[in-house]
Figure 1 (cartoon, rainbow, N blue to C red):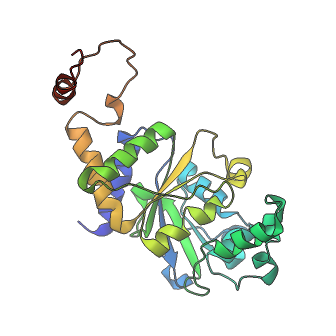
Figure 2: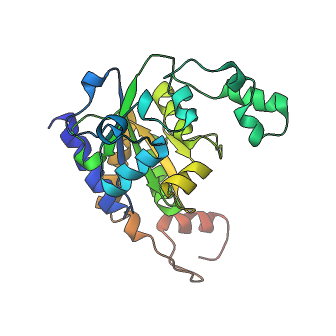
Length: 262
């Protein structure tokens, strides 16, 4: 099975097993336009349009579109800078754009300097599409999910090796935080959709984002499949507020040691 087919299967299984409202996304960074997959839409070239990258995520996860984005296609400054498509402006590093949300000027500048960015010129574009239909092997898988689905995804990541996901939750710049750290560090990332994603791209107030780099996808899916096959899949967990519910054997053992009712 080629890598694309494996990831297509992962995308379909995640959608079905976690009852996701929108498609998991495949994201691949591109070095040149010659790497654009056949059939991908170029917003400016093909339609004379521009999009913020959060809008592209929305088009891909809701409508199933595959979109290739290069410098001229963008309509938001943040990914242009943080994806390394231009040199970082001096006033950006001085905290100008952060001053709208951080009153302390020194902290606004520090935040800008500390924000992770891809090296300038490392990539010239990216392609985004539904994971289950992507005809390219992704660098990242991005999953918009509610907190219950996120909990199950984190359980699955923890299953094989006890892996825990640690993330810095920033309410601004989700297009950066959901992409750049995972590319640079090869680690999974949890991100809060920012106001732009909410206002312009339809992210819901109960949604979070989990990003999984390619090197961690098998680990995630092994956990997903294990819980599904052992009757502990996402659908298995349901509300049951009962006193003195039946305890698993190891609960009973602990309670016996502690001299508690069982």
